[in-house]
Length: 429
Image 1 (cartoon, rainbow, N blue to C red):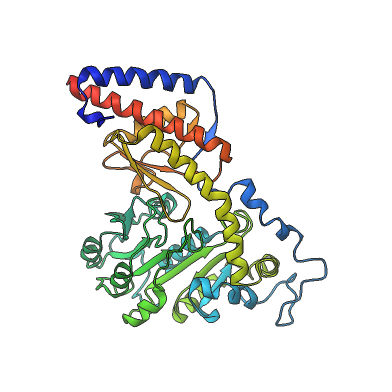
Image 2 (cartoon, rainbow, N blue to C red):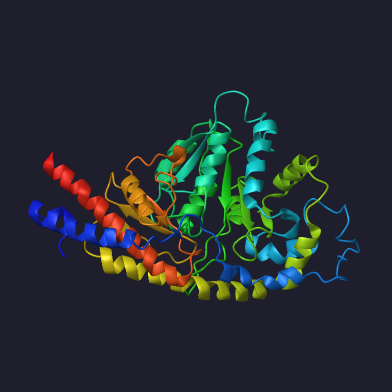
């Protein structure tokens, strides 16, 4: 069919009436489908059920001879776990911290410690003096933005390009001494699916910054979450920062939340030796130690990088059909209409949808009424405000495969209805 924007008022009204009937029929099904958060499905969680039986009742001694059931040990995490994730993080064991289940908690704590005490190359706490800001690639991860908003850190949005953020704009903004950091999801970004190019990584590592203590918050949440073969790879930001003469610039985060159990995984941190010492010193009063038994059970279950890769292939076998089914629904209902464009990412957990400007809020409400829950409009932008009101994040991993086609149909009908109503209103004005 021709683009909706090319239809005459008469043809657009006729199309609108047909879509309205289809939408009303969909609503009559009274479905309840959740496409809000990027959560693993029960089928994915079942892949790691062996963890629940590990370590067994006599397996609690660590390689250093200590008892994993007791207090003590390094806040840095057990050596076995740091060895297991060394290759994934791209850092030697001395430059890794393994924590409890939430990498977001580690990001939060790094922000708070920096605000209260500064980082290793700071003149003082970030909270003293003028208000500080972070560079925020958009669309981006709402929980990153929420941390900044909670602590009064300004947020400066920068558009994604397909190879990461607009680096000309990033470099310009970073010249301001009040800009202390930048959020990055460098591989299969949430939600755009961008993977940072080699040039982007090198420019981020080498760029001149007004703040000498500028930090890249490198949230590599989807490092192993590939949907296609061959796998996409990115440069090791820690090595590139060293080569650029900015060895302390990157804080690298990861987790097993979408590898083993979302509620019972491991949080990971890697950085320079100086940054590791800074974080451990900051953590000293917070905890006596991490959950060593959970770290040990992950080591026993995953064993090595081969074990990690094999588990991720089983995840891919569950997830990929859901993405493909959703694409098929969108292709069937939206292809050629011009009502929306959507990503087909090579990995990660999200599909990024952009509808006609000014329509996202309406579409998300129509989708909710149709029984398909989506994240609120604007959630992928700082302060919850999408200036073009067009971006919608779709999370297809959690529902059952049988529900994905229905969700794709419901969202498609909502998009077509919302967009045609806006076009009709514009034609009438």
